[in-house]
Length: 206
Image 1 (cartoon, rainbow, N blue to C red):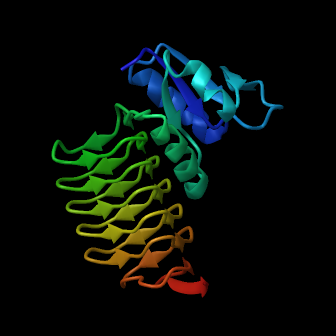
Image 2 (spheres, rainbow, N blue to C red):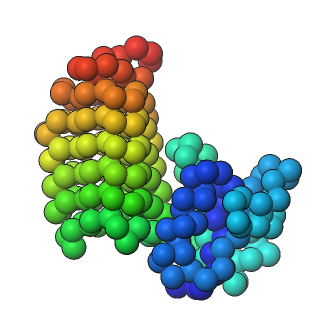
């Protein structure tokens, strides 16, 4: 681990990731963002755009802090092509069982809980005060929003977005690329890609 970190994505989400990075021991943090009008993100400087990655590659670790799953995936691939392996960032107040496997580029935020024998993929966001119970599989580039509660033995496919306050009962699967609206209650498998809302969750858009 380097003591210096560049976060890609100068947003509110990025500021939260930066706070977690400091708590994980990073001493110097700066941002890259393709919006050239941004000069700072809270107390942190924006020192360039994604085209500047190579300038810092020898002296910094990198982390992609972008909420949009597709953009986060695209920029992660840029880093991977340069043999850059992102850290895993876990807030000290999160509870993560020792049997949990978490892949690179994932952030676990304050008061989140991840229970035994769960697998969290690459580039995921396990947001504030969410819970993922035992034996779940959360595939790459999933965003679990604040206050989501996922019961045991749930599978969530790649690039899914699970909205704030959603509940998912045990033993169900959600396919790739789905959007689950805030406050939804998922009680059955979701096998068709689309946007789902309500209690119980139902498709409203393909």
